Length: 406
Image (cartoon, rainbow, N blue to C red; front, side, top):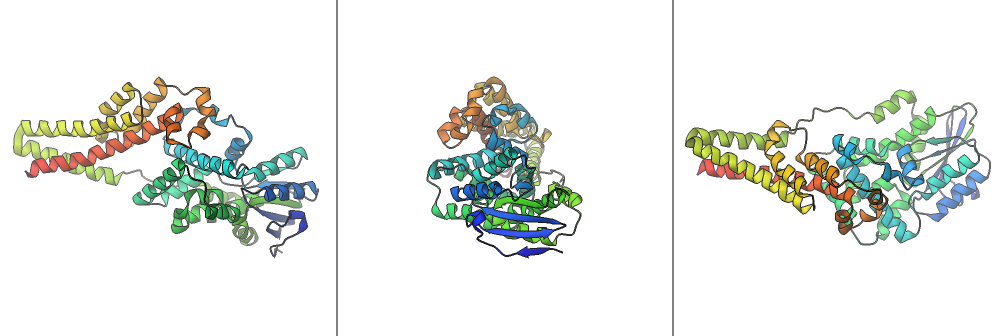
C-alpha cells in the first residue's frame, strides 16, 4: 500500500517543503530545495546528520556531479571530438547554462546546486549509498530539441544567447522561480513556461524519470531514503512515485531514448532546389555564359558570406579560407555543416591551452571573453560560419532567379 503524506514543515528539515511516499517497503522522504539557498544547504545537513536515512538520492546525473565536484572537468574536454560528433550546439548550450549559474553565484554568494553537492559529500562521509537520479542534461536537450519546430529552435537559441551575454543581475522574479522551480527551466526563461512541449521535457519527464530511478535503485537493506530535489519537482515526483506501475527498467529506457529521425533538412533542400533549378534554367536560356555567371554568383555569395562569418568570429586566416572553399559545396554534404570544417581547422591551428579551459566559465559570461578564449572562439567559428553560409544560400536564390527572370 502506498501512502502520500502532505507537505510538512518538520523541524528536521529546517522548514523546507517535504513529501513522504511509502512504497514497496521503502519510505521515501522527498526534500524540496531551492538551488540558490543557504537554508536548503542547512536542511540537507540537518537531515543527513540525523542518522535517520539508509541512503541519499539527489537531483544530479554523473556529468553534473563531476562538474560540481571537479573544477578541472572542462580542462579534460576533447574539443576536436566534440566537433566531429556534432555536439557543438549542445556544448554551447551547456556554456550558456554554466555562465548563467556563475552569474547567480556571484550575485547571491552561493554556487547553484550547493545543497546537492553537500548531500553527496555528507552521504559519502557517512558511507551511505548515493543514488544519482536525474537524467543526463544532454539527453534532455536532445529530446526537447526534437519537440520544437524550426522557429522554436531559433527562439530557444536566441533566448540562451541573450542570457549568455547579459551583464545584468539576475532579476528577483528569476530568483523566486529558482526557489520554487528548477535550474533548467529558469535558464530557458519565459520560453519554457510558454512552450508546453519544452516544459514537459524539462520538468514533467524528469519528474517521472527520477521517480523511476528511485524505484529502480530500491535495495532490501534501504528502508529510509532521502531524496534531495528542486522544490519544483516535489509534487510531480511524489505523484509518479506513488502511482507508476510500469516496470522501472523499460520505463527508464523509454525516457532516455532519443528517437532517430531521418535528418532531412527540408528547408535547406528547398532553397538548394530553387538555386539549382535557377542555374539550370540559366544554362538552358542563356547558354554557357549565363550559366557560368550564375555558378560564380553561387560561389561568391555562399563562400564569401561564410568567410565573412568566420572572419567576424576572429578566426585564423586558414579557417576563413576553409569556410570560403567548403561553403559552395553544400549540396554534396548536407549532413555536415560548413562550420564544422572551419571549426576543426581553428581547433587544430589554435589549439586551446589548459588555461583556456580553466577560464572557460568566467570567459563565457562576456562577449569579449568569447573572443579571448580559444575554446569559445572555436564555437563562435562554428556558429558564425554556418550563419554566413546559410545567408549566402538565401541571397544566391534571390540573385539567381532575379537574373533568370530578368
